Amino acid sequence: MRFALIGPSAPLRGGIAQYHDRLAEALAGRGHDVRRISFRRQYPALLFPGKTQLEPVEANASPPSALAPPDVILDSIGPLSWRAVAAAAAAADVVVCEWWHPFFAPALGVIAARLARRRVPTIFVCHNLEPHEPVPFGALLTRWALGRATAFVTQSGMDRDRVRAQFPARPVAMVLPPAPPAPTCEHGADRVACAAALEVPAAARRVLFFGYVRAYKGVPTLIEAMAHMPPDVQLVVAGEIYHRDGAHYRELAARAGVSDRVVLLDRFLPANRVRCCFAAADVVALPYWTASQSAVVPLAMACGRPVVASAVGGLPDAIEDGVTGALVPPRDPTALARVLAHALDAAPVWGTAAAAAVAMRTWTGAAEALEDLAGRAVSQAGRPC
Image (cartoon, rainbow, N blue to C red; front, top):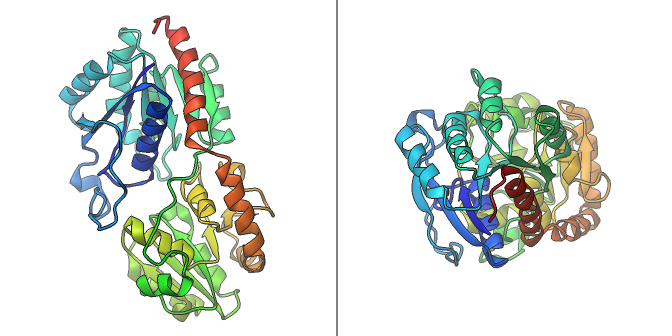
């Protein structure tokens, strides 16, 4: 089949861009013709909370993709580009759009509508069915844009059920995200060397929070939980801070009396330091207050680290409680501390189980699921390929 994939591609940074490119490679590896269409402007600078939207240049970057370079066409706020994207994608049998925020609803909704007029089906891969933070008219924009889609991929049972309730006649597939390619670094799995490379003080045991720090991710709950943890446990928060600033989280740690055991790495980490984060840690904690799913879960599991996460959204779909990690109630620092203490003791066993479990979720499997869904979408659109 001929696929057109619309979404962020490298050098745009982040988990969705990585997912987009890995999925394209998997489809091409199965013999499909794959064309990627990426953003020339993803977020206007005024609306982007971070320092840069691009991956950092590094000495040991991933090898170049075997795919043709993406067509860098899409401007999220440029209607003329939406028309150009629809025209470029119309030669495909099926179009796949990455969906994660209602900010992109006008662009993706218009593109999908224009393709529908040409009887080209569009599949929306829903990373977040709705935004984590309130967005003016977000629900209305989301429903309008998703209403242009022919079919859906969701990454949790919760989102699958919600899509089915809103669009009962349209095909939906739930596909848990596979692990990204295992990151590497010059220190391998050397815990001490990796901590030193990150400039993290020595500690007997270490809990890692990894990812952008946003309001819904519950870092305050995790810092408060540290006050109930044994004194040999250190918390490393590794990721650029989008909500408040480092001073806010240092103040929270001071109030909890754990300033000496909380380390903030307030920056976007290149690939060679991502592996260091997990190698230096024993357990990964995701104390989210709300969630759809998290790409950090398969990444942590691929690195052989169990995940302790809040039992919210789609996180219970990805973590087997007491086997590959543990689930806790959200916003409960006492319960989180108790479960983290147990997870630290069980980390070698749970980490091995986590690595084995995520190895069963492959990009080939994700591509096969998308192939099946694409076939149904093409039939529903009534356009032979």
